[in-house]
Amino acid sequence: MKSAVIVFPASNCDRDVAVALEKASGQKPEMVWHGQTDLPEVDLIVLPGGFSYGDYLRSGAMAAKSPIMREVIRRAEAGVSVLGICNGFQVLTESGLLPGALMRNAGLKFVCKSVPLRVEDNETHFTGSYDRGQKISIPVAHHDGNYFADDDTLKMLEDSGRVTFRYLNNPNGSRNDIAGITNEKRNVLGMMPHPERVIEPILGGTDGAPMFAHLVEALA
Image (cartoon, rainbow, N blue to C red):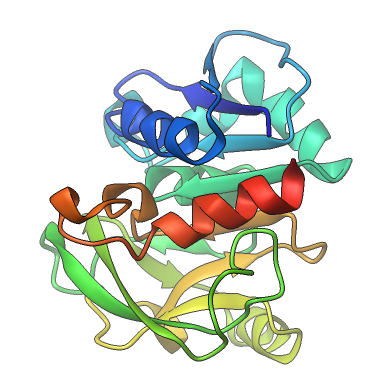
C-alpha cells in the first residue's frame, strides 16, 4: 500500500501517523507539503492531527484552502481513500468532503485522554478488522471536537449508516455522540480520536493498529 501524509504548517501528528503507516505497510509514506499542487500515485491520503495554521479563523478552515487540497478533493472524488484525524477531520468538513462542522468543546476546555468508542460500521477500508458494536479505547486531544450538523444532516448520516465511531462517554458535546463519519462512497473517513497513538503496547494500547492493518490489506 502506497500512502501520503499531508503536512500543514503547525501539524504535530504527521510523524506519528507516518510511523503507524510504515509499521503496518513496511513502506514509508510520502510526506507532502501543503503548498504543493500535485500528489504521487497513492492508495491512501492522510490528513493528520495538529493545529494547522495555528487553528486561526476556524480549525481547519485555512488548511482547507491550501493548494494541495484541490488535488486531495479530486482524488477523493475519484475514489482514493482519505483519512482525516482530529484536525484532519476538521479540514475534511471545511473542504466539503464531509458534512457538518467541528465546534468548540461543550466545556470550552481542551480534552486530552483515552475515550471509549463503539464501532458502528465495519464495512469500510478503515474498519474491516473491527466487529460491529465492538468497544475500543482511543485517545482524543482537541479543543474543537464538538461535531455539529443540522437535524436533516444527522438523519441522513444515521439512516445511511455513515456514523463510523460513536463516543460511549461523550467528551465534547458532539451531537448523537458522533466521533467519526464517512462520505457517501465510504472512501473518506473523518474521526476526532487518534488511532495512530495506540498501535503498540508501549504506547498504552493497540486498539488503533487494526485500522492501519486493514487499510494495508484492503488497499494493497
